[in-house]
Image 1 (cartoon, rainbow, N blue to C red):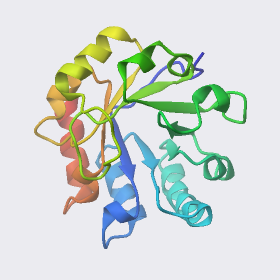
Image 2: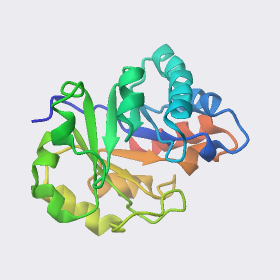
Image 3: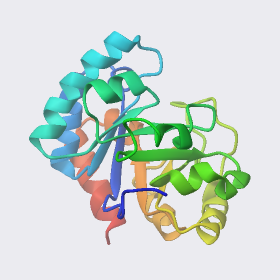
Length: 211
């Protein structure tokens, strides 16, 4: 079973150095936290382990300062080295059932849902939250299988009581609809990372979803 008993997060930032363009990604993360981000995932798909680790150490200084959970995307080495709050894995990554037998037995594990059939497997049972990915297609992640849309999100909500983190082209204008469709939390990349004012963008999103 999953070991995290609650998921008290509403606004989830997925960040990478590349997503922040010319700006310091840790500065963007700090501004986002000040604006209302509850939890952050570092996703560095193209970085070497050591480069990923350097970035994670830098970011963890910020998240520890504000007592914000830091999740590492699909890199056990980095997650263990920095004692991350948890790890997020996809359908083709190392599975939650394997992670629960390692140092992640008491850590948060997120698991991306690309097929409805995944809701019936043991990996879902052993995960703490499910990433519904993507709700809407996005340029920041092109290797996805199913574009769920609001109806797909509603269907997943009907089939599981697990916390749902929705991600994929979510922005200020559709955030409320995504929550109303069944998401417990929205995850964003570009809406904050590409914003002229990340703190204001996070503040606006947070206040839109908690209305």
